Amino acid sequence: MNSFNRAIPTEHIHPAVELEARQLVAGHGDKVIIDGLDLNLPTGKITAIVGPNGCGKSTLLNSLARTLKPLGGSILLDGQDIHRLPGRDVARKLALLPQETSAPEGMSVEDLVRFGRQPHQSWLSQWSPDDQRAVKRAIKAADLTGMENRMLEELSGGQRQRAWIAMAVAQDTPSLLLDEPTSALDLGHQLEVFELIRHLSADHGKTIVMVVHDLLSACRFADHLVAMHDGRLITQGAPGQVLTPELVHQLYGVHCDILPDPVTGSPMLINMHRASKNPRQAPAKAPISGDNDE
Amino acid sequence: MTSGQAPRHHWPLRQVFPATALVLLLVCLASLMLGAGDLSPQAALQALFGQSSDEANFIVRELRLPRTLIGFLVGAMLGCAGALMQTLARNPLAEPGLLGVSAGSSFAVTLALMLGASAATLTVHVAQLGALAGCLLVLSAARIQGVGNDPVRLVLAGATLTGLLLSLIWLLLMFDQRSADEIRFWITGSVAGRSLDMALQLMPSLGLAFILTLIIIRPLASLALGERAAQGLGHHPGRIRFIAVVIVALLVGSATAVAGPIIFVGLVVPFIARALAGPDIRRTLWLCLTLGPIIVISADTLSRLLVAPAELPLGVLTALIGAPVLLMVVRSRRLPTL
Image 1 (cartoon, rainbow over the protein chains, first blue to last red):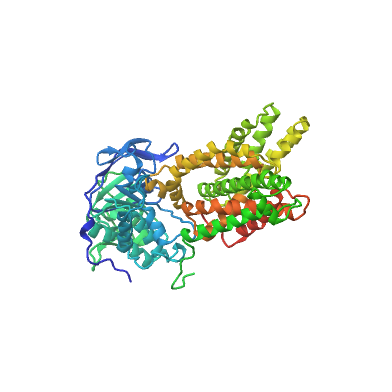
Image 2 (spheres, chains in turn orange, green; image 1 turned 60 degrees about the vertical axis):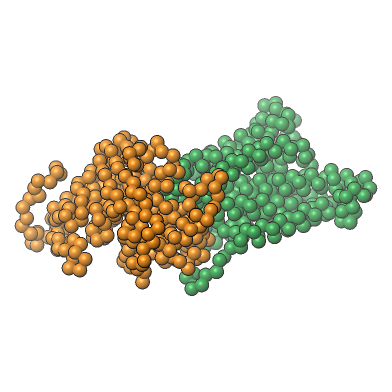
């Protein structure tokens, strides 16, 4: 179907940006969800934020993306408080794909992707050949060449999501934040989007941070896993190293065993069951020890 | 839907704008040549170029020319206000007339006249303030209810506000018969008998609205992608919305001050504009500048001809045209999202 393993357009590799959270307190209204979180995101890598529903992963992402103002602490972009920087400057370094996207009926793929150039335009500099090239490049990166004039509502879910990612790519930023980019997609379309994300990281050198609902996809496609529970950072690191049965239990209350995928080598969860439901099969494990929880 | 080769459904602006401008020119000529007066179209045309009887000159230059010009302004203002309001509310039914913005404007003018203001200069700004208040009121009411996903509820809130304000206006009129006649002028929409001086007074407001629109047009267009997407592009949706509301108030207040509340124009015009040029406000607004005047001027011309020598109120005619469009939008498939 779609493979993104084409010749590498090396012309657009960005200088890295540093994105970090310092003692972040975040929430909605006066409801604090994240209370004092420190996080340094590896540059040039794909980071997946995982955790159970309501653990604060979207809150964290939206704080990083500047769309949610912290209640305390700060988000630093290249060492500067992201909320003190002009919106345009931030939008030239960070692109965001929100969780729920909607475009008006009758908008074409190219119309959508062109929006990505807004941070680069101003009163004086209107649409330029540079903008046009960036749009073309983004459409090509998302493998949508030839579909520029198609209406968004005519596309499949996966294609539409790729068009939105192309908009973020046209923003030409060193980093890209995605909030559950595959949540409404079926298996094939999920792969389509994850492969595009890998392509953007490997070939365009983007720093990518995404909230991912599905733990296995996160392990498969991310270089760096950030596990959250109840608004706190539980652990982070390479998926193969940090994903343990203890972690899965701590995050989701699920017992399981972990095997490496014989083909890709990424961790797989097997023999999953809830703690209390199935005592007969519950493996006799030592109680969780030495973890920083409780 | 997913047919292989989907054609582009919209016309490029550089084709459709000149076409509508041509139609507008014809409509303007018709408005100058046709009317209830006992004057043949040829005579009217001659009068336009100053070669006719005094009476013909008077009819064309003092009666028909001003109302055509005012119809032009009012149509353009209401069309643009409708398009802006629909974009900022992300709701294809958000029409200033339906939402009580025009009624707020009428109410403010009524109140000011009651309180003793009589100078015509006052009315424009009073009307604009009233429009601003109406706009903020209905949008905040809609936000409280969390209308987000149901466009029809915003219209309900607006209809309620309109009803309330109209009753208040009638209540005020009961206390003061003297100004009732003066005020009736502002509560039934019409472009007849308005002086061009009034239109001149609008110019500073229109200039301001134009500049503000230029400033926010690009971020405003991105709001169509949703709040977070617009933020991701570096914009501040709250600020953009507020400025857009101010523009709507300037435009609707001005239109109401010269022509009274005319509903449905702000619904019909952007609806047609989007059908022709697609959903992007940067294209829609251009077409509103031609389509708005086309609708208002031709409705006004019709209002003179249908029951000649009497006249239908313009507001009645726009409602006759607009109501079916409203029903069509509401009933058509799922509501188009904006």
